[in-house]
Image (cartoon, rainbow, N blue to C red; front, side, top):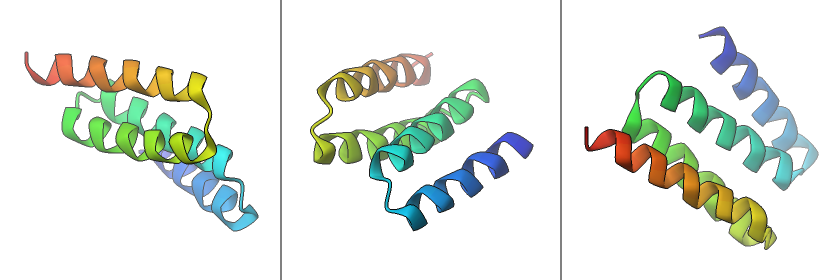
Length: 79
């Protein structure tokens, strides 16, 4: 709960600063937090949101990492 609150506050600050890459990073972290809590659908949602932002920023290496994250969450969701 505390970690989620911290990531959310960080996300808000990055948004206020207009730092899209920072926002995407925090969204990815929220995805990993949900993943660690075995909330697969929520993790997928966060990862997909981060992917869209990294696609908009044309950050291919981060896009690749997000596809890996999405695959990991999808795999876990099927168990």
